[in-house]
Image (cartoon, rainbow, N blue to C red; front, side):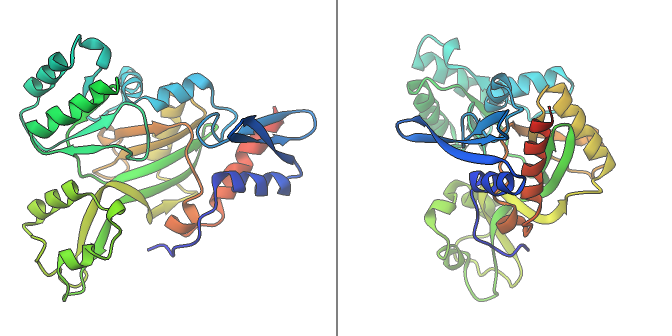
Length: 319
């Protein structure tokens, strides 16, 4: 496993690389509470920041809007023939009342558990595991009150990967895995989970894992045995490539980025049966503002993040 290192911010990586390349960097006030980083060669410049406008000058505003919406993303992926997770889209504007929306949702979903994901957002934020109709009604009502669209999906447990495409070139591919504890042969699952910060644990997912493995909190976890405690998978180096990518995966990812007309794309994808059969690939989500700061402390790679940023900057100023 990767050796944990102190993370740098994405912006700090841009400053470091830009200065190394001889470009000028300057923090510029954009709003009373927000600054942008300006990178310039004296004749041309671009500005970046976390969120809007993002880290990649080549990404258009409409591309960011596309990848920022799971509903839009799924619609376009399906149009171009890519496999997506089977989903039930629930749009706030399609219903005249909260009662009508809740009735529609509960009528269509009788089998649990399922996931509810907000239409907008990345990195597994605000995803909720729904275990029964009562929970479904409660969460649906909250989304209606907030005037938020959402999607309902089955829970899938497959091999997950991130593929990063930068200006039509695959720069990175790595595995993603659930956060987990490892048994010592002496401690119960409850005791081991007690060492984990509550904010990093997902009680509903833990409940599902107990059901899956026929365990309970008082079960002593055998030495070397793992137990997952959060639904959202994190980057890992179990599979990690910055060159010599699987040919089929590389070709598939570049084509997808071109089909989506998006030069920068972080593709999160389930690949359950090996890399050669791309017909089994299922797209989870797309991200036109993918981070690189995590590579040193999640994947034990202190080089590739800077290489990616260097390509982004040099490609922009070549034009």
